[in-house]
Length: 331
Image (cartoon, rainbow, N blue to C red; front, top):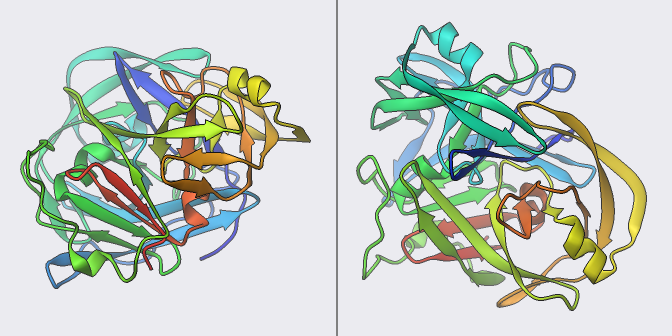
């Protein structure tokens, strides 16, 4: 795991949906591509383990995984549970020779608007695991470094495997089962998390709300900031740091650090002030004290974003979409 300067990434809302994307700027993207091939995953005990690369430092974290598209690659992608649907840059779609389909969609970032476009994608794989083909959405994105992440591996694809583990400490992504169709579907009696994903008892087990939309999947948890009323936060590993809506910062009386970080969306770059958050409570435990950002509209429809750094501090996280739980610190 290496440390580098990271840019916290905010939500992108497409139509009535929420999507997140993480793309490094050209200045910070050098040497960000994980090394490897299209078939670097290994399958054993019913799960597939894929190497990833984790960057962490200065209160931010980011996890990248290799993917292959249309038989080409590998290319680095951000592991992004905040992306309701997986997404790549328009520049990358053209580089792959993909063909656009349908009409452009209006999308909205933090204080700005732009357009997204669907492209036909016949095949894609992650760690040698072939994914169901179909269309993939694209957006124009700032930065043009050759090794910058090409897009986001979103919750729409990750949830198809039922349970997924991001092991930040050992730099692996573990897929819990075979891909189950082109879309995640809720079931009445979900199968338990595969034992191979759980090396130990979770430090924190959190009820997770799972929303399935026409384009993908969102997951959220209730978070209480200080003595304020608990609000739903989007769980977003594509955002390198956690974000809180300004109204909640004010109600909770959080103190400013006097520092800020630069935040990059698809259509804006703005400065996000930072605050000390000593008390962040979940339904079944507390998050570790940390510094969070705050900007209006960062978490469209939510009270905040639970970003990658908050999860990285536990070493690992398991997302159990069928069982509607998030497990922190599972070894």
